[in-house]
Amino acid sequence: MRVLVTGGAGFIGSHLVEALLARGDSVAVLDDLSTGRAENLAAVLDHPRLAFLRADVRDTARCAACVEEADALFHLAAHVGVRRILAHTLESLLNNVQATAALLEQAARRKRRVILFSSSEVYGKGRGGVLEESDDLVLGAPGVARWSYGTGKALDETLALAWHRERGLPVTVVRCFNTCGPRQTDRYGMVLPTFIRQALGGSPLTVFGDGGQTRCFSHVGDVVRGTLMLLAAPGSIGEVFNVGNDEEIAIGALAERIVALTGSRSPIVRVPYAHALGGGFEDVRRRVPSLAKIRAFVGYEPRVGLEELLRLTIAAARAEGDEREPRTPGAALPAGGRAP
Ligand SMILES: NC(=O)c1ccc[n+]([C@@H]2O[C@H](COP(=O)([O-])OP(=O)(O)OC[C@H]3O[C@@H](n4cnc5c(N)ncnc54)[C@H](O)[C@@H]3O)[C@@H](O)[C@H]2O)c1
Image (cartoon, rainbow, N blue to C red; front, side, top):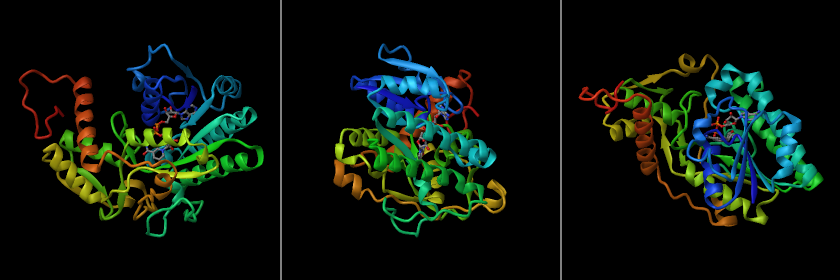
């Protein structure tokens, strides 16, 4: 297949690109490097079946040319992360919604197969139970910037499904939950890489609120595998799927696991939301995906449990840290094992 991956120089995108190349596809990456990095693709940049184009998906002519050449499209290009969304709400919202609208229109004109990356953020506050694809979305008020990312992703989904119903676009929507693994940056406020950096650097792990809020973390390899299974299943067209892992952990307990696994001496501190993310910040208390639908459609099962995910991600962070900051031979290292 010839596959276009928008956002292919980002965290998930770069893993997806590697998987597509490994199974023999030709891959074009369209990425403006606004938050992604060419280094994410370092292992495959010279691959004869990879083409990289640095451009904005909203650049209609270039987007159309890329779509024309592709049999299937994975649309991941978006600005992500709580910190980035709060700091640049309008820019992020416009970027995400306009890029998706542009891509869907080009794909629909040519009837290309599309996998659209959405987010568990569309569920908003949820109702406290396990989240199913058909659930109502319980998003907060439009004036609260924190909900703008989920609102934008919900609009992306609505657009995609309308293109499907009214113009026959063969699209599948995937709602990723917290996805982690090598190359994920902590720059935009992602909790797991932030805790790992703090633990390895010997600084306090900052748990927002009381730490009782829960999340489910999945390995990026599982997410990539799940989306490839959906691509291959014609019955998934016009449908929305949760993709992730349903192993639930409280954020306070996650911090404790990371301290234990890194052997760090870092303390764990509680930080009020208002202090960390500004007054009026509303968090989601519980976020657990139902995987019943993706299991029933394509037999997807997550393979990497939380413990293994943490070990793999910590090992990758240590290796990346070693590459960035070569250790002074013989220098004493702190308990985290890495030079601060
Ligand atoms: N990482 C997660 O936990 C998670 C959870 C839910 C959903 N998702 C979704 O998965 C997708 C990928 O997320 P990620 O974590 O890899 O983020 P990322 O920031 O690493 O990757 C996004 C990529 O999109 C690029 N990009 C952004 N706007 C662009 C534009 N207008 N034109 C071209 N390129 C553009 C960025 O440069 C970056 O390389 C996103 O759509 C995100 O909403 C991720």
